[in-house]
Image 1 (cartoon, helix red, strand yellow):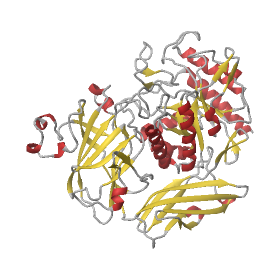
Image 2 (cartoon, one colour):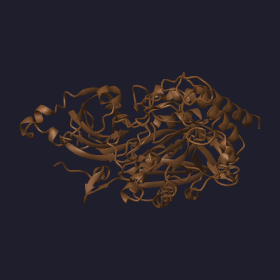
Image 3 (cartoon, helix red, strand yellow):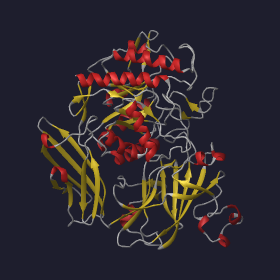
Image 4 (spheres, helix red, strand yellow):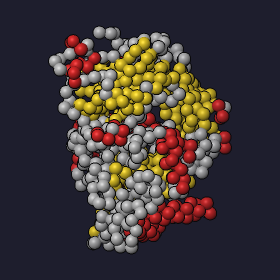
Length: 598
């Protein structure tokens, strides 16, 4: 067995006494030297879970009887990765289970530093082998994970095997039943990242404002700490060079201030980004960061001290023919449509989307709500589920905590606020998020309560006390009540700011009739008109992200109007706009003009 360095041992997931152990700081890629392993892979379905990751590496004569005939690493289904297998292999449209992914590649790198294998998103569970050695496993379909492969790589030919399992279970996050499509696959890039022996694993740069100063707080984590080395931050445009103080064997920290007039703050109207670099010995990383402050005060959401009303929309991560394997063109198309809709905000539902969304939002000045898939019936009573919940929150936050556009971390969606286990677990999650990142707001999408046949609509969720902003999902005019019932919302303008995180109704594009006929564009549009008029009257409501930007796949929606799609989109899945798109666009333009006039 090959010797394994201590750092290598600590930087991978490993088995110990039957429990998974893992590092608590993800390796961020930034501008690292890397070798992309995207491209053609071989996919081999294994619905009976017949094969074993170690077994398939053995020479044929050493394998168990029958295996050489039944499993061929070199001749599966050839698929370009990233990919959702049900989109590129039509016969596996609804397949859920084991799918082996294999990739042969050449490596001719130097042995002076260290190399990590980084997988940016695999749904849902994965196990990984390189040249017959099991590197480890990961649970969670939307966040990155890494394994050190310095000692596992061979000069010349290498074989990487990833077992992907997208089966659903009650104790997963998300749980057994969701209202979106369970795309299986390696949805985001796979790459080998080369670093020196000692390197910067991640960093976090936060800003806060006073009347005449901008305060910067920076924290960085290194792997392979060496006492004699210095960790330095540079922001050339500000003429800033700052040496960080060591606060432990692997952590550095520093605070400093600049006059406010020297710093051009990031905002939705002026998404200013600064080049930021950090160096530690032979290692350096570069980033582009916006400096801004977001907070809540007296019932207002404040961006750089100024009240802001969030003109938003919810969206899933999905593209026809691609599933979740979005590329830069798909991301750009989303932002073109956000601009057309006059948005300054988007809710990325119901799981972390590709990191390119936050990077592009930084450039475009679009504020973001990001969330983990703790959707509806999560098994909050189980400690292992709470641990998984925290893991997914941590991986999402550490990936995107330097993105100025992200202002809201959401811990859950539509969970039962009468469930005692939930009411114990979610405040714990809110506290955990604030420990990880105190510079952003914590939220959740919650249900609303009503009494006396909706003559009074109110918030009665104990979780509100733990949130900076509370999201409300309500479907008046669609599943229940009348579209303008929110006029009866019993508000408290000085209490927790409210975002209408979901509202709307279904419509099939091109289906027209009167406003009284469901599934028509007219019916959906009437819901939007009446909702907007009702919400205009409520000062506690500080924004909205209606459900949803475009129609999306879900096996739960099978009537004659939907046929496997949720039809609540302002556009259909191909981008054809429905009437409600223009109604919301007009309202958002009016809100935008009000701010400009003010």
